[in-house]
Length: 119
Length: 107
Image 1 (cartoon, rainbow over the protein chains, first blue to last red):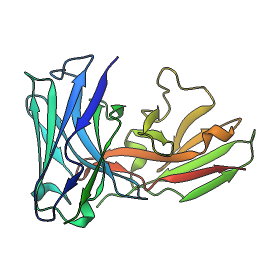
Image 2 (image 1 turned 90 degrees about the vertical axis):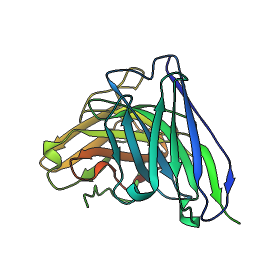
Image 3 (image 1 turned 60 degrees about the horizontal axis):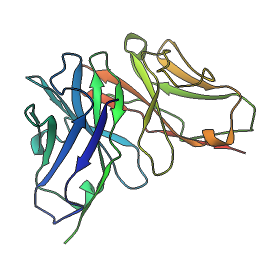
Image 4 (image 1 turned 45 degrees about the vertical axis):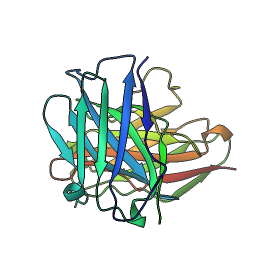
């Protein structure tokens, strides 16, 4: 059974950079049918897609976040990561990592990690 | 930017049928997926590719699409079906797009 687990700091300061890691277990990250993505949810709000990456190439980012986001994949550790720069309070959210199948849906999700941006 | 529009809330009585819509320009030419999110929990896929159910999802949940509107139908609604429901589709310009979510109340 595929499982995803987010890890990272719960509190970051404004203007700093957020780095989160998603560890994948129960299956290889180097899968030809999978994209690996990040989705966030601000308090009391809906789901917002951040970006998705194929293990050895194609990467897609939300146009509204593209200038601040980088998603990377580390096949040796079966992990993928999110880097979000120039943080503001508006980036306070629960961040989920998820697997997106080639056909378009997110079929496995991590439990989410809460990130607060505050000085 | 591409948008998917859902009603903010729906209410249904136990045992009745609930319908949640999701509309977007050209949605009929895309695959629509649906997620359920209980309070404090991660989203769970309940319908993919308009009408397919993942294993383990009861057949009370069904999906359909007509024109540019997709519909999630929950029959025989139970109190534990109280949750937020989101639709999602892929747009060639904006990539993944989620609807704003619908809070379903069973009372």
